[in-house]
Length: 420
Image 1 (tube, helix red, strand yellow):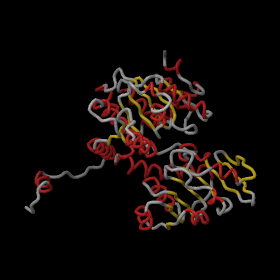
Image 2 (image 1 turned 60 degrees about the vertical axis):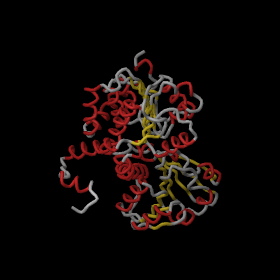
Image 3 (image 1 turned 120 degrees about the horizontal axis):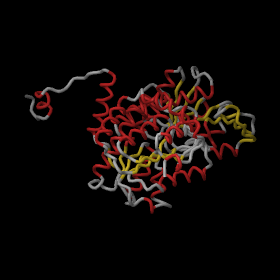
Image 4 (image 1 turned 135 degrees about the vertical axis):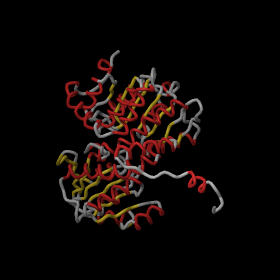
């Protein structure tokens, strides 16, 4: 059956618009273009089925086309109901990729689309947040047997994978793409930092300068969000549970407070923890009138929406992607993008140049696990350092930047224990 006949998408007529988006990012992803050239020659996935679950927008679509260029039969679905772009889905179907995704499905529809993707019986997977892996290790273990391995995009997904590994339950090797240098140093910091504020600014149309921004979590994503908030003129408060990261935030020039104190002073709240209920009932009770809540973690559980709703007398949509919760004392608290990823649900996600390196890592990691799956343990696997360096070297070349190399004498010196 053809991809067009097999796919479930919202509107095939949107394909021309989606193609323009994909062509635009293609022109700004030189590293992934180089990987595509390699794949077209080598055909590393010839005869194999690949299932991809990522935020389904133009940059992800181009990754799918690169994997397809390597000989794969590709099926793709979205990893977030509000980040799927229907025109991009339609364009992919026109290019022969099977798509099970549409914008804003019901929770039941969303789950069924994930399962339909796995029912194609893939040999390899690319996952985001562990959605596919969770299904394969729970209600549909019957679909896991033929899977050689895969690659995981996010911190949230890797936490799940490590939990499965710890229990001895992980059924195949998964490469931790999120933990590669060229992912978290650039994607998590610069990509999240820019795209979060793009989503917030285009959605609210409000000033950031002079406001107090509370960044909940100071990992690499939190560092990027805080850095960009400072650049926009905000006063930045960081909350943390890790004393080392708290000291780092302090030395980066930010105020560090526990959440209950930060809740009293914040105008914007941005959660980037990967955990649940980091903002909850007691915090809502002391927030300013007009406080805005947004999430840049993976799932919509970082702030507790049911507890906010329980304190509210009414909830209404006041602007696209903004819900107003009116509390019993008359204060309003605003939730952006239903508490889902604000940079994707209310924006276009990370810049193309950032996802260029991340998705090059994804494609090369998929090739690595396919080449080595018989040798690898059923465990979370690191991206080979040589792959990290390869991606960075191509990136530098695309920017026209040259760097020095060690001389033979310098290499010998570094390998020696003497001073000579």
